[in-house]
Length: 116
Image (tube, rainbow, N blue to C red; front, side):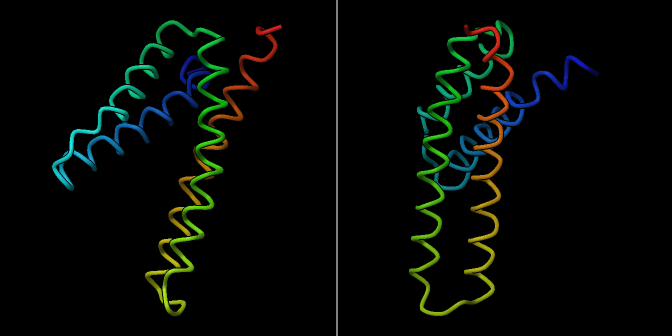
């Protein structure tokens, strides 16, 4: 049980990247090679627990999640009025951004003592 809790950020990120890959594959019939690479790096990270890859991955995911917050807010402002669909887009989008950012924070927190 403790082992599962220590790799929870990686598992959460792996789940989100798998959803991203499968949504592109089945939703719009597009092979997203970037999502596949992210999945493979996360699988590598789960098995080998490399601190440098974890720190780099966490920094990239944190920047990406901040970028996605701005993208979600931009899409929300494209709606002509505040409807239930607009609020759903905002809430789900910000929830995913929060999951990404918190996972990257916990990756940094987990590997920072071993980095220095």
